[in-house]
Figure 1: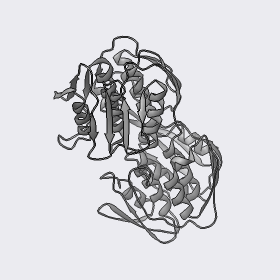
Figure 2: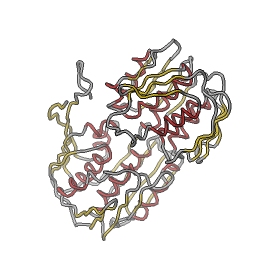
Figure 3: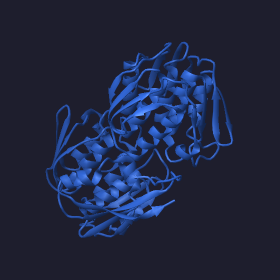
Length: 433
C-alpha cells in the first residue's frame, strides 16, 4: 500500500484496467465504515482499559492512524478486522506532521488527549491556510471547555487541568469537530451541550461506542447533543457500522451497468436520500434489515440532486451519480453545496465522452448514448470511484491511473467488482513522492 523505508509519503502507484460493458450481477459483502472506524479507534485514548473494535476495514487511513497511536505508546493488536487497543500507560501525546499530513482525521486525537492526559501536541493538518482552517471549530470548542491552546511551529499545543462542561455552538456543521468535542466532553467536569452538531450515522456510531464505555450522552443523531462528563470510561467491544458510501457506490455501479446485485451487511436506514434517487433513476430496490437488492426496472433515468449535510444527499455520493447521469436519458443538474473543488472528476469523465459543463457549484450533464474507454487519472477518493463506474459503463478498455486514492476508502474494490462479473485488474505503474 504505502511506500517503504523512512518516507511515509512514498506511494506505490497502481492503475486499474477495466473492460467495460458488462452488467454487475451477484452478491457482495460491505465493509465497515472508515469514517466511523477512525474516531472509534481514537476513543481508545479515553480509557486505560482495552477497547476491542471489530469490522475495522483494511484501508490506508486506518493503518496510518494505528501507526500514529502506536507512536504515542498505545498497544495495538491487529491491523484490521478485529483490533484491540490499550492506552493503559502514560503516553507521549504527540501526533507528528509526518503522519497527520497524510490524513486529516488525525486531529481526532486532540480532544481525547486533552480530556484524559491534560496535554497534547498535534500537528496541524496539511494544506490549511490560516483563517480558513476547518480545525478552528475544534479549537474554539476546546477553548470553551477551558483548554489552553496555541499554534507553535505548525503544531497545536494544548493543556488543561480538567476540561469543563460548556455550551458550544458550531458555526457550521462539522463531523470531525462534533466527534472531537463529544469525545473530550465525556471526561469533562459537568455538562456539555453541542449545538448545530453533525447528525451523521458515523457520529451516532461513535456515541454508541462511548456509551458502551460508560459515557453519558443524549441527543446523538439530532443537532443538539448533551454529554454529562464522568470520571472514567471503561473498555468495551464495538462493531464498526457498515460503510454507507461503499454501499451507495456499489448500488450506483449496478444501476449504471443495468445489473442485479444483492448487498449484505448493510444498514439501509443510513442511505434514504441515495435510495430515493436510485428509485427515481428507475431502480427497483428491496431492503431487509441488513441487505439491499437492486435491479433496474428499465432505462436509466437521469436524476438531478443537491448535496447537503445528513440526512440529505451526501457529498460523498455526488461523483458516482454524475458518472451514472453521463449515460442517462435527458439533462440533469448536480449542485455541490458542501465542498469547493468537488468537480475534479468532470474533465476526466469528459475524456470518456461525457457531456458535462460546470457553472459555479453546479454541473450540467447531458446524457450520451455511450462512453468510450480511455486513460483517466484519479484526483481524489470519490472522483476515483466515479471513474471506475464510468469505466464499467464504457465500451472498450478504460485505465484509471493513480488509484491510491481508492485504497484510502474502498477495501478490496477490484476483488469485489470481479466477484460481480466485472473485468478489472490492478497493475503497478511506479511510485511517487
